[in-house]
Structures are given as structure tokens and as C-alpha cells.
Length: 153
Length: 244
Image (cartoon, rainbow over all chains, first blue to last red; front, side, top):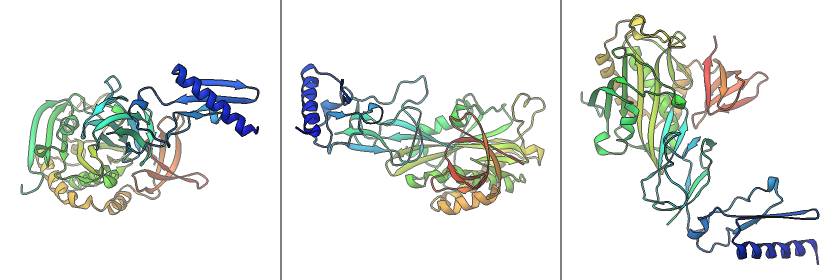
């Protein structure tokens, strides 16, 4: 059996363990090999139709064991940053966030703020639906075109 | 006035005219509306800094554009607003220079500042320009404001109502030029002494400032600078101070 086959078999076994015990994260070290499996954030799965492009777990051993970025499932609308700026999830630091993952939103709801130089922008959602994922970190500089949210109908 | 900016709402005191305008962005009753306040409790600048104004000293207002603009052109808005305010001040006898990102200076002192607010829905944006202009100097009232501000009165007596009227007439012309962002960027550069103006810049999140020569405005609104040695970069977010 080749190393690839063995790794693949190990991954399948680990995946089965994750599902059986409903684990979000699993890290196993075997000799030189490190297997780290991370499931999408809790709640996210509920809204995503079967999507081959979005694996439930990502094998790691890559830089820092970080989860591999996921491609948006086909049924999801992607909200992109309309301009470069700092991403804020709430209107002020002590206020509640506009939206959380799992929230139902209506078209036109304000979902975040992007602050550029001398330009304070409220971003309204073009889509109604459920917030499946929040992809940017609060207070982070995001570039124009970067994905901010996934909204499922 | 026969302009698209003829609606004016005057309030004695408010938190911030920008906050008041933000609630009306996209609403029919907000189109072309200017909100003027004698005093603000929560007037703000970049990163939540306060804009301090004693009652009776300043012209504080926010004007909502009478139409939506393409989101792709939004970056030009603060620059366009600065050019419009500079034009109105010039016509009132107060010549100013522009300072990145968009303050207006008399000599080296700030006489006016601008902060824009928008509401973006996909490829359309509803926009408002918030403007604060120091008009009347009241002896002693500016103590403690650092760096010390400039006032229109330092140059020539200016009446605030007349200045607002002039401002709205300029906005009426300015409204059309927003569809030409590159042209506005070039006008702004000339009025700000670019290329060639030296700045000391402190990038957001950085500890040490650096000095660089400002070259121009990039599409997207960043400031293109050249560091010692010739390396060029585009600055998106920073505090800036012009050097002599």
C-alpha cells in the first residue's frame, strides 16, 4: 500500500470517528504524519445543501494546521467588499453585531460597516436569507472584492 | 434656490449631522437634503475622533446627494467634496490648500474637515458629505484644541448663511462631476501640491511613522507615495501630516 493510500484510508477512518462522535476538530499524530481535521463552524452545515466543492473537513498539516479555505456552495450568495476598508460587524465597539451566523436577514438589512479614509459605509445585503458564514474578522482591513458573507436563500 | 440642494433643515443641537443624515440615506425625503446644526455633541472625524466646535463658531452640515452613484466611483467622494468646499471657500475670500486625505488648510492650520457617510446596496450607493468649517474665532474658545485651528475670520469676515448658500450652489455643479472620478482625482492632486508634497505618515496599526513624497491618488482612493530610495506604495489607511 502506498503512502497516499494509507493516508487516504487513515483520513476516512478519522472522518468516520468525527461523524460518529460529532466532533468539530480532531488532531492525530502518527510518527511524522499529523492529521488535523476541522469541521465547518457549528451551524453552518445546517443550511448547506450537499455540495461536493465544500468538504465537511479539511486535511491539514498545511501552514499552522489552518483550515483550508472553503469554496462557496452553489446555493450560496456571496457578499463581496464593494471597496477597500476596515470591516466592522457592529455600529460601535460596544453595540451588538449586525448579524451572526445562523441569523435570518431580509434584503436591505445593514450587515456590516466598511470604513475607508474619510468614508463611512453601511453595507446593506442585496439578498434575503440565512447568514451561513461571516468570512472577515472584525477590525480587519479587507480589499475590494474580498468575500465578507455567505447568504443561503 | 433653484437647485437640487434647496432643502435645508436647521437644528439647534444634534448628536451628529452625519448620523442624522445616515438614517435618511436612500429615503425619498432625504434626497438633496442638507442638515445644518448650530452645535454637535458627537461630531466625529476619522476613527471616531471628535470634531470640537463651540456654538456660534462653525458651519456644520451634512448634505445628502439627490441621487445614488455607482459603488465603483465611491472612492472619489471625499476628494470631490473637498474640492467643492475649497471652491466655495475661495469664492468667499478664503483660499485654502488640500491635505491628504481631505482636510482644508489655511497655511498649516486646519480650517475645514470632511467625513462622508454612505449606504451601499450592491452596485449603487446613497451618499452624504459631512462638512465642518471653522468660521468665527471666539477669543479664548479655541484654547486646548491641538493642533491650533484656523478660522475664516482670520482671512476675511464671512457670514455663515452666505457661506452655506454658496456651498450648496457649488454642490449643484459638483453633483455632475462625480461621474468623472479620474478628472476629480487630478484636480485634487493639483490643489494639494502633488506630486511632490512631503508627508509624515503613520500607518494604521504601525508604531513608527515614516516620511515619503506624495505622488498622486490611486484609483480606489489610496495615496501613492515614494519612500527614500524610490520604492512606491499605495497608502490606504494612515494618519498624515504634511511637512514643510
